[in-house]
Image 1 (tube, one colour):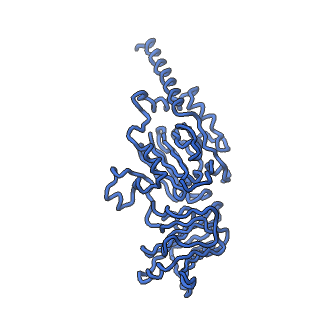
Image 2: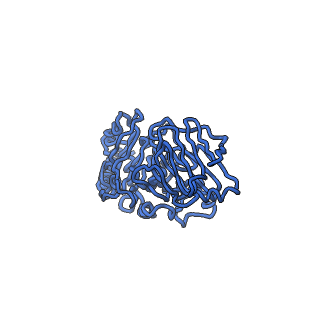
Length: 391
């Protein structure tokens, strides 16, 4: 996974060493104008990247020659929760900077070096912040766009790899590969031989007053702190919480048309999401508190997307289609995560961060049995009506 391998520090630090000389991505926090320096072993030669309220500009050290991006029109963000990144890429002779998740889509500054400067870039080994604190250091620089769609090797073509349209499942972390392998199979489906009308039964339950889905959705209208019937969805859990994820690791989520989630993160966990029915719109945000999405995509039946601690972590889901969408969400902390933050943080109507503890509306097997019972009652009622109204 591009840009994802590296050192996630337990606490912010004031200085660090690049994992590989001449390359890497530094994520840092600041509340004021600051600089991030890259220097060689002597500390006398390098780069200095300056963040001001309105711009980003870099200088060579010691000449102080400016490295200007004429398209740069942004600097420090006034939005709560903002953090920043700088990517040093010797192989592609590129220096980049951005806000929030480290990726092309959040970049606000870019500068390309002359090939003659490659040796100079390869000599840079130390990272020195001023008025900023390093939160994490990634081994790899930011290179290319990050695909949101995940595909198995049997589905990938040479064109797809060259264009970067899909993430090979083998490029996911080992934790995410486990989740992917658990829910990507052909038999992982809603309608099965024992209940071929499962999806129809869910739609009926959602649309019919007095049925469980209809009534439960109505009860949850205030789930995120305000009376908003559409800002809710049903969470049907598979299995128990084994202490390796925020909430139960496998959750079937039911999204009627027009329903959506608040903007939220995922407790720093990794995740795999597969669409089992309908389609879901995913909007990505650079950080929790960003006012605008930097990217969006629609995922349809059997499409799979992913989340890591560093990428795709903050999003909003919305069913913009005409049929109910059902997804399977799978969460797990990376093995390096010893904190285990058991909540999803979300933004309420006042743009204030709140905690949501991933809960369960019902266990899957119980839910399936209930849908069978509701559907059987409906079929019996329809047959009874036709018995007395043959024409």
